[in-house]
Length: 441
Image (cartoon, rainbow, N blue to C red; front, top):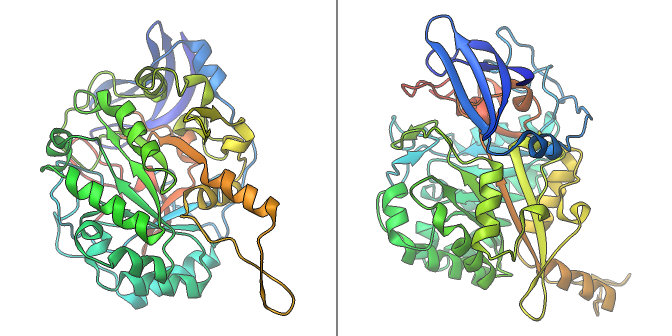
């Protein structure tokens, strides 16, 4: 049964195509046909039609991008952000280098394959200015490649702070954080809020398959060093069928055991773009499958019913729930509004992420004479609640098989590109079956 239509692309030539969404007994599929390369069908929801429709809690609110750019080809080819886009942006990735100290078999950025590309500090300053002029301040994700390979990373963070940005997240494999004494403290002192740590499992065989070598000792050392520095930590597992879907519950338990330094776990079911040594399965991991894994492997401590889709982005892009860790070791699921699932705009989401993922801050109150006062009982209580909150979320990125342009037009995670501006993440990283990208050079 056809339940809707959209537009997508051909996985081979990336030509824009009309697509239909079809309900079958085992799930919802996207069908499309290229006149040159034939028919393609991709599973987009592993569940029945009722669950698919029930998940849609999307806000119809539209946020026009600030100073939208004109396009010649249209979505997804030259958006940055364009006048057809329906979100002004929330999080922006700055790729500081394409160098990396790993050679992961799975890498959306295909790091380390091309000649070294690193913007200068002056270039990055101009990027900050451009972002501020186009709707900033956004939450800034410092990415790569491996961004810690730049020795001027603290200066980059300080520059961003001077330009008016208030939240900085480091997307990292954690190797330098694990090995270099005092490095985490230097980043914290520069103004870093959060370490978004690649954390695919709790055993070395998982890292061998996805990252090319065993890394568990380095992961544990980087967590310990970041916790000592007061940085917020988010564990980020890429989940792939046949590799580590059996470790979802163990990752969650590991995160809870290291809370409140670990602020949450952010799952990313693997997307088949960039450099990917794994074959795309007939049934990739969709939101219902991820939620089933979470419930089964936590023995119901976290339930699928606790989760909702994003309200600011398209709901089929993400899932989220927040829990309060109780004194007896149990978890209490927070109401959807408290858990961030009811964010209806980019600013709502930006503030929620900044509050939840940042490290602990000393609660200090000053009187009119500038003297330090005792923190009130209410302030202390609210600070404790925040420390006891643990977020579990995930983002299901799109590849050339399941790209839905209706979803893409509500994307609020962007990549900064000097030529195009703020490009939606899934468009920027889109590659065809031979690895050809639309934007990456």
